[in-house]
Figure (cartoon, helix red, strand yellow):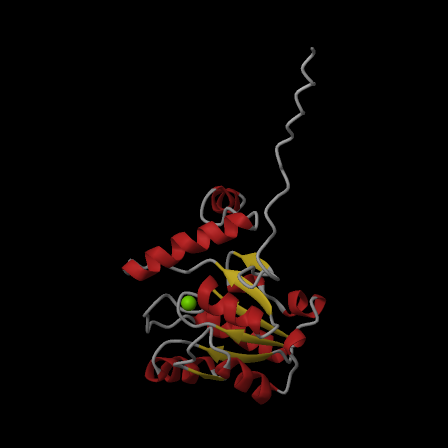
Length: 196
Ligand SMILES: [Mg+2]
């Protein structure tokens, strides 16, 4: 009696399906906001931006002037790009920066909840595909922006702040981005820095 050939065992190498429509997936990752120019926006069909405040435009918690950000915002507005601040910071902190930045917006936005996104789009009179969401955090800025159907742009945080919950969020962000093929805080970051 001969034994039947043992069946060839083929390991299942099919990648796991990506979650949903990738609600945590930023459309683009940029080192900083200054890379967003009128031309960058025009090529993507974007006519407005919702902007996070802390660690996107201004170092976390800072009240120090940032002339380069004010000039950047002014250049976009000259190109008729609508800007709207969507910040989870206190209303008082948001108001301080809105006066300097000279565009509309709110604090206490409770991102990723949708109410503030909906109101911002209504005030800008733009449709979701015409608007980008720019922020440094995956679980607030990017998640909320993707749910709203916006073009999500994640920027590297200006400073590393040492709050424990921020550390945890950063570690989780890194895991999620790795799943999408970006080693955001690891070798990709080093490569970007070496290219400067
Ligand atoms: Mg932020």
